[in-house]
Length: 255
Image (cartoon, rainbow, N blue to C red; front, side):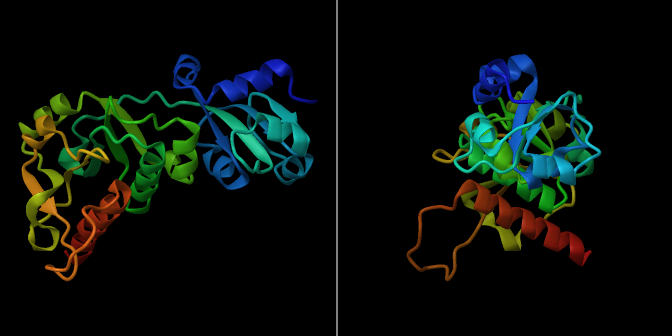
């Protein structure tokens, strides 16, 4: 059975945030990514080549369509289609807003690039951080580019969109530490770090907003090496997230 024109149009429309939100779904492409997400999210539609379907005979999906390589290329949003694409339902879990009081969590303050966002989800997965709280101005994690960049991490990391200022104020009143990276912060490797709390990462161009900065209890700085050497002005937000998370987890292993 081939993809109908209506289904082809439907898949291509998932590039649009408004359509994804209305339908409550997202698109994933490629054997590795689709394979990682099957079983974690309900699959509404799966389109794949004969070879891929024969290698996966026990699929659970609302609709399975066998397509040729040419048909897959017409439906795909990738430059190089990869055997299979699938439409999954977006999760609807209510977040536990007290989670940072008990475990280490991440927050993003208006991160704009979906590639950065997806990479940060992948990093959170690597470092065992299961909750990511995003401002409403942060990119949509269910955009095709962000989903691809998560490399399957979206299956194990819950992403919540919240009023970030209000959320931080609420957990601060309960004694939760709030960490953030700043050029005038204290060197990361010299500051006591906890196993719980919220690590806030800021916008690619402007960093953490002034509103959120006022709520940060522990300002961190990632020092360059050697200290007085002329270097780049700043780090990419995903790279900075990796450095900070690695140090938090290194401290935890020392306990």
